[in-house]
Amino acid sequence: MTGGFELALNCDFLVASERARFGDTHARVGVMPGWGMTVLLPRRIGFARAIEMSLTGNFIEADEALRLGLVNHVVPHDELLPTARALALDIAGIDQRAIRTLLARIRRIADVDGQDAALAVERETSRTWATSIDPREVGSRRAAVMERGRAGRP
Image (cartoon, rainbow, N blue to C red; front, side):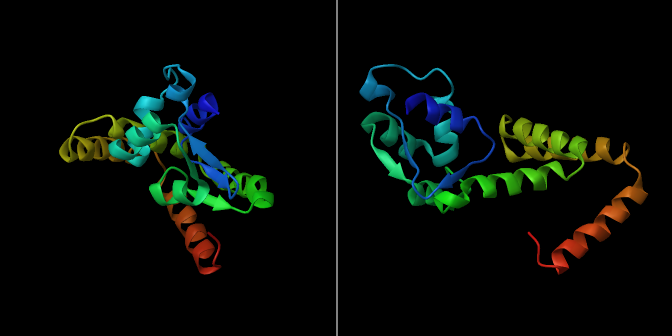
């Protein structure tokens, strides 16, 4: 339970079964976190709620995890794997260089202090990216994205 929750917190986003429960049981077990619990949990759900979860060792249900922003989706148990696979296919179907660059920048922005510094990172990435792409590719991709939106696909 304890290590599994820490492992889950290291994921970029989470999809949970309606049956899922989450709890930081380190204190109850008598061990200290070593895989990111004290850093990642407060970033996900806020300092006060993380302190409460860690000090009490109490569990929260999937719907509460969704409300707190701990998970992105709660789905019926039988739909967990298909939902996760569908999201993975959506990500895999996008230019992987763009995915890696965007994810790296989001993580870098999370580590800087202040909005001005974060916006500077974003501007730097945007300028660098713009010089490395073919504008014709952007145009054809934009048309495909518009068609996907018109078709009502997520």
